[in-house]
Length: 314
Image (cartoon, rainbow, N blue to C red; front, side):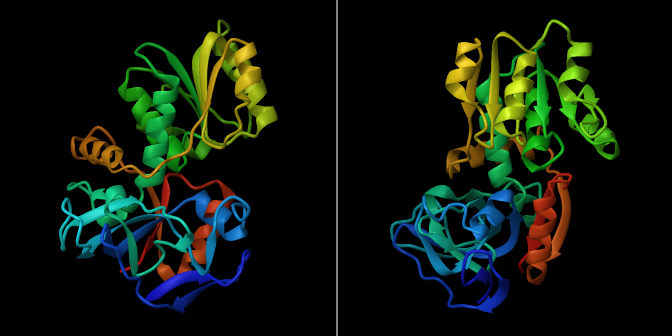
């Protein structure tokens, strides 16, 4: 099968001809039609997790995918051959990824894809969608509250804006001038161009009494600590890049949470329901053929993508 892989951390990343994976009794083999590109992919490629988890080489990259079940293990009962599925396909050891024509994964972390979208859009959902759900749950966004979302127009942020708005929250979105209209289409009621204004000063000017919650998918610890000063007493904050200093923020009366997506078929089913009900729109920025995956990863590294980048595998 064709697969996008590397022989060592740091690359080069290249298209290789590798064996099609086998499956265990609790797994399914998926013919991949589309695969989502996430910052997690290039961090894995660079070796950022080499001291935390086992890896195997050639290391096939990619964790988000949508495709068709090609084969089911003997113990699998919830899925069948021919089912159209998607998922955050993470399993140890790292290296049997989704940037390939086939991927084998436990059936327990796969769900049927939303019926209303193509494989391309479905592949743009798992990691960012699950992360956004957890972020919004972590800050417990409520009707009438004001939520600042830092990094609002990227993969995770674009879903977080929609989910927070759906709960009735008033969303302030950080967005470059070119993305302000997009942010408002997602549901934001205010925008701050973080390239032209200081976010803290801008929000404090319009909300001098403070705000209730912050969702941040981009800031480093020192920056996030300053942004947290916008919160009222008892405010809530959630970071998807593990930048929240939970204990020190607690001393300031702030409930802080670091959030990381976990493979979860039940949560994927909820994402599918929201998409099919028209409650969540998939934000797809750009597609690349599999052989141009290094270019797609490079674009993801810039942090300027609006919505999601997806590889077309089949």
